[in-house]
Length: 285
Image (tube, rainbow, N blue to C red; front, side, top):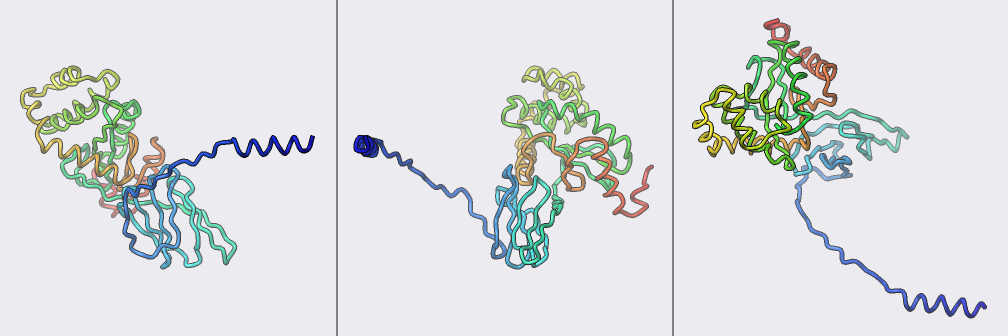
């Protein structure tokens, strides 16, 4: 019986095929680091890369390779681990300590040429990356208006287009809205597009533009103007570089808004207002 078992085992070893998959490694991008890395890690969603350097800094990169910022840390920190999008676990092995830290990056966003609501010189700038076919963006429109009303004279709302690839009419809607801005009717069309976000198609978009009182012949010329397309492409490229992946994504004075609610808006706006002069903070109240 024992000999029969050994024979069966031997036959199985001889007859079982050996599979070896072909593995290929393709280098997609090389990032030149400013300091010698001690450790590299990234967030689970892949939006950020953190580099702990030998000179006790944390360098923060977008996954595309853009350096978003840096922060000095205690030289005792010898290992870091992401805890969600805005928190890091800092390990100090020699001291037997683990520190949970909030890491907040303030982005520099180019708002030149972008449509905005509110006082142009307001101390707080809200930037929203939006998609005209996104249901969450449409749902957020009343909230933005409440924020503008509550902080009248203290905030301005800047609109950035970020049409998502799975929304087939979003880019056309974005170009139409930017063309409408040249006639001073961006926000009129903005509201109509979001009110009809779930039924957009080329004819519907044009019908809404006509309903907003736009000169349709001029609109069609401006919609295909390379300058209009360049402005849209700038928004998309810039948004991708600072980690925008979905819509709506909101920044307040460059700080990512973690909670899209009146309380979330108020917390960040009030923090920003406390950092400006009293004259700025109370202007036009």
